[in-house]
Structure formats: structure tokens, C-alpha cells
Amino acid sequence: MPQCEMCGAEEASLTTTKVEGAELELCSSCTDFGTEVRDESTGSGGGKYSTSSSTGKSSSSTGSSSGSGGSSGGSTRPRDMFDDMDEIATDYDDKIRGARESRGLSQEELADQLNEKASLIRKLERSDTLPTDEVQRKLERALDISLVEGESADDADWETDDPGTMTLGDVVKRKD
Image 1 (cartoon, helix red, strand yellow):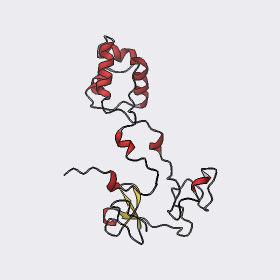
Image 2: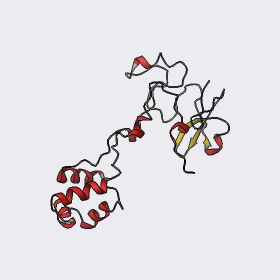
Image 3: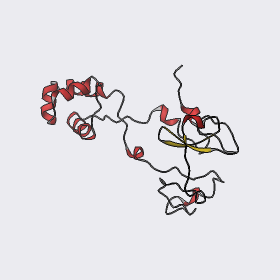
Image 4: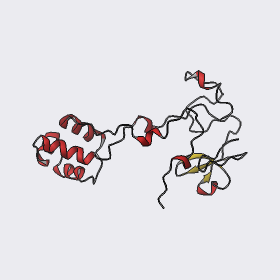
């Protein structure tokens, strides 16, 4: 029986609902959190955002995953722009400041070296702003550091051998 992707409740039929930009399969009690999505082509199974073939055949992707999933809806999740993005470390400000000070550079000297404004370096070291991709590359090259965060323990929570068993309720940390 399919599970609600928000609360994990098992229900015979789930409704595709858009919640803050994400389309989720939700039970009747969770559909109030978003807007119901209506499919124009209900028979094909592919939505307007689908990047794969909607005929049921897997097109040059992993062929082994199509036979083992049963009727779980889809064998792999579609890729999005966030899959290829690196996550900036939470302590990027300390990394920048520490590397700059260890080289004996002032904020103004580092800014001149990077061809950026000193105010940007100050904002980065106060964590008032995140570096753009270009500034991140310049800082990493000039200071010989990495501002990308490695895989954390939180990322390991998302990895599972059995796809379809994780729900948002398994991962979300509530602020009570």
C-alpha cells in the first residue's frame, strides 16, 4: 500500500499535491498543506516536468532498476539542479578568516589580490553574505582552502537500500 510522502500514513489512494514547489504524493489529511496538481495526461504517467520517456521503457538509464520496484511509480527520481551543486560549509566565514590571517593578509590585501572589494571580504567573514560561485573559486585558489562541505551525518540519513521507505517525517527536525 502506498505511503504518504509527508506523514508516512498508508492509504489506498494518494493525491499529487504541490507543497512549496515540490510535488508530493499525499494522503487526504496532508493535502491541505498545498495545492492539488491535476494531470492533463492521466494515462501516460509522465508529468510536464518529466525528463525521461513516459512510455514505460527506460531510455539508456539503469535497466536493472525497472524490474525490481514493483508498482512503486518510478524507479529513479528525476535529477534537478541541486544534484550538481556543492554545499557551502557552515563555517565558511571561519575558514576564510583563518586562512587569510595565517597568510598574514589584511582584508584589504586579500580583496586586492582577488580583484574584489574589501567590503565583500568583511561581509563574508561576518557571514552576512554567501560567496558567489566565482568568488568561492577565487578564495579557494588564493587561500588554498575548500569552502565546500563534505558529506555530513545528516546526508547519511537520506541514503537507504530500499527506496520509497523514507518520508519527510523521517528526516524533518521539528522546532517545538
